[in-house]
Amino acid sequence: MSVGTLDPEKRGWRGDSSRPSLPEIHGTLSIPKSPAFFGKMLAFAGPGFLIAVGYMDPGNWATDLAAGSRYHYQLLSVIMISNLMAILLQALAVKLGVASGRDLAQACRDHFSRPVSIGLWIFAEIAIAACDLAEVIGSAIALNLLFHIPLIWGVCLTALDVLLILFLQQRGFRFIEALVISLIAVVSVCFALEIAFSHPALAGLVHAFFVPSPQMLRDPSMLYIAISILGATVMPHNLYLHSAIVQTRNFAQTSEGKREAIRYGILDSTVALTIALFVNAAILVVAASVFFTRGYHEVAEIQDAYKLLSPLLGVTAASTIFALALLASGQNSTLTGTLAGQVVMEGFLQIRLRPWLRRLITRGLAIVPAIIVTAYWGERGTASLLVFSQVILSMQLSFAVFPLVMFTSDRGKMGEFVNSAWLKWLGWITGIVILVLNVWLILQFVK
Image 1: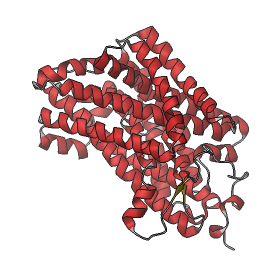
Image 2: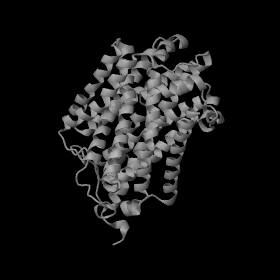
Image 3: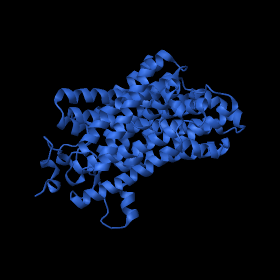
Image 4: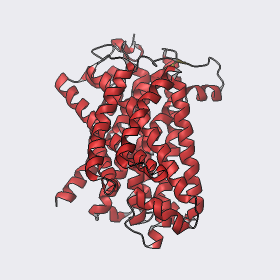
């Protein structure tokens, strides 16, 4: 029997994958045996949308608002490039989860020594905490804008998503996916309206999408925003989460079944991330069309954008729509962030606790720093905190990207599902580009 056809449990892994992360939802969603394309596509649709919410969270709002108000459309190409990187890396996460039966955290624990695994776990927890800082602050800002709830109390209220996840998960993982997709639809509709209100210059917009600005490498401030866009777009915890939740589908554990699951899983994430691309670009375009063109070049605070949108556009509902989209985005992201925390803790540490206790612990690890930071800084300065949180995420990316590319390029671990030569090199180039950009950023600011 060739290496390519060996059972994944007997190939290049030290342990087994018989104890999956999120065991209560593992393999719970059936796949129709009918060959109908749309039926299969709908059955596999969902995990990609849970991942996509992390690409349009409040951290993205802060970076996109800053980019649009300061540099007009010039950084649209960064959003496009970041999204293409995200599509590639999430596709590799799908391959790893389906072909090996392991999520990325389990794969790291299996492959690396315990000290290295513990180090990677710490980096992953830092990334999740940084991401959650953006999400809970964004949700709290939205609650403050819509209902005048003090920021610190708004942060505390976001902890209730633990109860929501428990309730929905008892009814089945499909209910979580349905809620997330509904909230994505709310965000998308809101920004479609905002773009219609703002009347962007379409010719300049299209050019900026496909032609990067050379000024970026000469301007440290512009590079800082570009790196924060990268950090807000390609999120390390999403790679861990995606490789786990693709295993919620009960697909056939055969070569043909896994190949089908990978194909539809990649289609799901590509469609979802394309929607995320639209939302991210829309935020930047609205900021550029409304603020930059009217001379408001320092609108980075979400609160300021909310206050200025209606007066500048002359549309009373514009600010309210903006805040509703922010609330939907923040709550969506906190849901998936909590699940990612579970995957990381269970995968790296093999901690087996009751579902409610696991969620409480992972939520606490993320929300406590957010409460402390919010209590210390207050309402002002939230934009700089949001942007800084995304740069932290970008700094952690390499610790997730390089293992992912390494595992999926290893024939001993992946068998027939190993990356082709071009995909392998594209993955390594993507990881190296991310690393180089981060080093460049550090050097610019040290200078």
